[in-house]
Length: 434
Image (cartoon, rainbow, N blue to C red):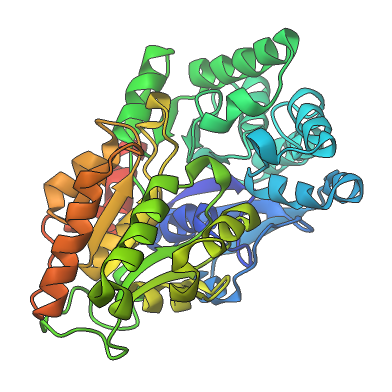
């Protein structure tokens, strides 16, 4: 039986690092098992915020990859202000941390580049792909955002080729993302963002969301939306998943780890205060505790922590490859995950949670009440979710885990996680594509 072809339009592709690249990299890896032959369309010369050469090994040898040049204004922005490098990953200074240059850069980013700075790739891509689709038999086209300018490529192709089946995949929301309100948008710019977003919702044949709440929100705006979460790939693990031996780690340290990128809008300040109090008040805890970072942590956050009592308990490994990051997860006792605090972000499920789940480690999560992350933790028994204002319950959880660790009883366990394996998620995708 001949496989159907699916064209995947994505800005992020190896050697890009971070969670954004992994979603369609893994789908492309497993789609042939379910009757689909993927073709990737991606920039020839992108400006990636992170690089991870280890992800290249996941690209199938026979995968067709089509590339064209892109022009991005980030080099100009970085000359204006070095902190503009954060924009590539959707990060920027907030509140009192903003200089006048940061404020100006944020205003320019939100009002001049709609929906984002990769918008200059839309017109040449539409021109190129319109011809490509006429010359090649493609059954379905997927656009993956952010950057949401990828969806404008799909929208314009749909207008030119009405019979084209188009899937708009939202790894994060557009106007509902927490930092949207920080973009200093004029009324005109805000209206343009929302009109473009609604045009995508109403013209895409299928809209994919990575969380249950986002799928509901998209449907309320007229989208034919389905939820396919991110997940974990068992082949990524350098050791068997969720091994249980009841022993503490070889370092003799009770290790709480944050793996990934942490920006100011998701900074769990209350947790740092609780840990600061614990290392000052509890000699036993202070003797054994380590706070480990593996990833890119905002400088302002690090400066704040290093001015506290936990400064001597920090192990900052910097950015690691995906494989190395998984090893660090497995060598931790509690894994930290944070989300934006406002209620509109309760549908965001950070991609790292699924790899956290695969380790069987206990997870401590911060974010809004009734968040989708909380639902996943409850279903799997993998940890606890707290609001950013919780104090006593967070302290009690940490000390409970520490007590179990001291007795060698902090066992690794995970239940009902098979639904989040990349292969099972790809099977679900293939069923939606029929």
